[in-house]
Image 1: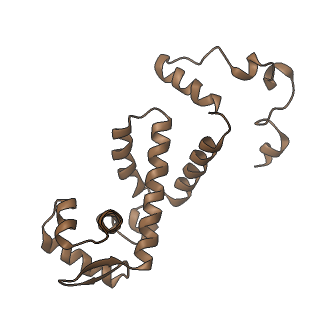
Image 2 (image 1 turned 180 degrees about the vertical axis):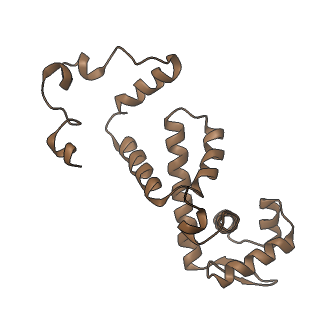
Length: 180
C-alpha cells in the first residue's frame, strides 16, 4: 500500500487540518484556532502546533492570535482533496452504498488512495453522470446486489442490438476499444 506521505508530502493528520481550514473558510469566511480545535475535537495548543508546522511547509499562512488562511499550495491541495472526496462518495453511492456510509468511507479512502486510482474513479463517475441515460450496467449491478444473480433481461438484447446476439462489434467491443 502506498503511504499517504509518499503521495502528498503530508501525513493524514496534516491533510485533515488543511481540509478543515479550507472547509471553515468556505463555510464562514475565516478559520480560527478554536474553530479548528472544535471541528477536529482536539485542544487548541495542538492546533497551534500543527498550524505552525503547516506554515513552515507553505500550506497555510498562520500568525499567532491573528488566525489562519490557506496559502496557494494549501488551497490547491484542499481543492484536490475535496474533488477526490466527492468522486469517491459519488462512486460509492452509485454502487449502492448508503450515503452516510459513503461519506465516512470516502473520508477514509481519500487520504490513502493513489492519485492514478482516484483519477480513474473521477473519470468513471464523470462518464456515468454525463451519459444521456443511466448506463444499463448499473441496473444490472443493483439487481445482482439484491439477488446475487445476473439479470436475465438485457436492454441491448431486448432492442436486438446485443453484439453477442447479432455477431457485430458493439461500442464496447470495437477494435478502437481493444487498443485502449
